[in-house]
Image (cartoon, rainbow, N blue to C red; front, top):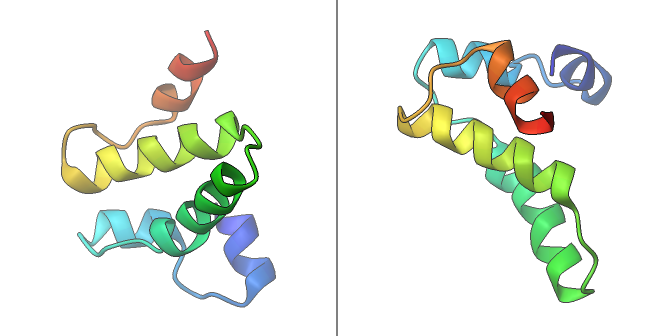
Length: 74
């Protein structure tokens, strides 16, 4: 996530937002991609997975941990 934030000029990576209890920009970034893909009937399972994980972490139903992403591919 840090790499993508650095490329976009965003100085507030998602990890920092989550650590500080701030809302991430997941809806504005991944939500838009998912919505547009749905309109075009294009499956975007990787985007949906990242979106779901970040939203669960934001909502407090999932602890932030690298293992969460690994669990989705097993």
